[in-house]
Image (cartoon, rainbow, N blue to C red):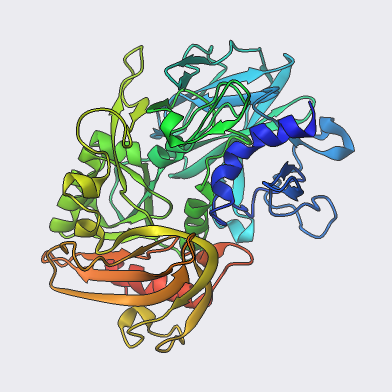
Length: 501
């Protein structure tokens, strides 16, 4: 396969990564030497450290040192053209005592193993290996099925069933699949429970799937953003899927675009001992979340796609006194529906018509329920180059002990996408409200725009915080992006929500 063809099918992930410097990572615990072609045709490293094995990085929870059978070159990432090893899970979130099924394809057929990692601080490692599967027999599964741009692998045979022990900690997990000849891929999943905690972390698996272009093969794959034409060229939203399936792997390395936002927050929050419970946004949609069990709901990453039940539950949570923390931008932008798979398994199909077809528009603000009525601000647009976040109202308790003063510029904190207050859009009911940043930037047309960070107190007493930028979570615990002022401000917010002294 020539470089032009490789560049073509690699461009799927790049379609978003190039406009969002925090899209794919890097994830400090996920290190390897894989490369991709950028949109100029240059080879650039995909992961944080292209010098794996140089001895300078340590073990990093043992990750990247698995699969010695691959020889001195270590493991290599599987791709969506050759499908050396790819897989998906039967469910996004699973409770202790329940089982999760993994469906895996291996080409050429050979044995493989699954290492299960839990994301956390772990002394700076970023993850810990929990178990390793026995050696499993890998087969070549049938090609993905596609109908009206909807790609599904629901017909793949079961490869491994994992019974989650009762004693496993709740959290974000990653199954790392490795073939005997050293190819590797990933499957994220969540271990959840309904026990009370100070904070419930909601992993945005619905938005992750909206961006999933699997398979990135220049032929079959489709997301809610892109599909391919007969010449293997990447098409835009007008030709993309309107329904995508959870019954398929994630493209490329098998980790969703933007997954790093959630992992950044998890590592930081667990380091400082916050009492966290975990769930997926599909749990929120399906009514498996009781907000009254938590002091706050935390949305740590890019969370763009919301169903009506999700919004209804979160608004009821706020009105019942549960605080809300939105650490990214462009939250709750598109309204979506979830439906069952062909075999009747609920919430395996995600539908968003965007602006196509008859019926109501799919933007929340176009169905007369703008995001600002929940968040206090709403999506304003993309930020082509990272810009400083400019502190406003520095005497507010959020900025206490951060060292930030009025007008201070926190470099690189407005990035990816930005939110702001829209004066002509109704605000939510509130006791008090404040904007904590006002940051100028230029958009893709070189027009002057600004970003804002919002905090308000609902009549119930619940606090609702919206960072208004993609770069807030990376500032908590991502190498090269950490900012102590953002760490302290986030702690001030969560401590107040958790009622710590």
